[in-house]
Length: 291
Image (cartoon, rainbow, N blue to C red; front, top):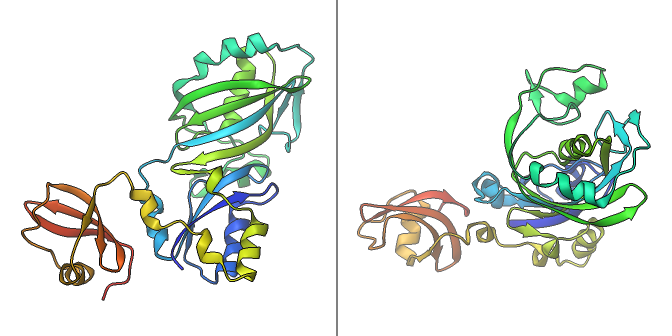
């Protein structure tokens, strides 16, 4: 089984929990995922199955989109409501204050990863050090917040916020920065990822639906083809003889197409990626077994 299974991750599961469960359902250990989600978060987790796992790091779009519930008046050690309370405040926060703070938080930013994160320092994940009560220096790194939209209130001192951002952005940290901007501590009360790269909620499946499809023998219908990742590239077809050469790592001469990278298709379907240079086609990455 090869393809991309877009999972709607349930709350309380780690991304690794999802992968571990899917290894049993899909009967394969060849799985990769794109963009780790915290246990409290839900939403889009693309899982690359079989040969498609080789495409995880080849995606052109690693941007993400979230809907976040911001709670003002509370700061925690994790940056979300699952952590230990560090500070509380009764300072009122208005919709107008939040709207006024958003422009300064939009665009290129330098963001310091939180201690409760999977970022490694000297080979040790920060969250393991945090659980030991340790705090270490972390390097700020560039991220981009493309769009922030206030979607309305959700109760006293809580607001929904739509976030579109680059890979590596911590929404928890962004929410804490929003709290500082309005003069009231803030943390993340809920988080749902609505898009990861090219994959959105509309293509996602809950774990129960995935298990049901397995029980009914219909798992393959849930998988998106691996070439979905490469739809931005031009398509090139090759005949059976050229496909055989490419599958064996041999170049195809006098290809007659402009230089660049292509999605390659043989008589049996998608083969992988190829590059044309000086009228010669060579393989960049195969997603089928070599002959």
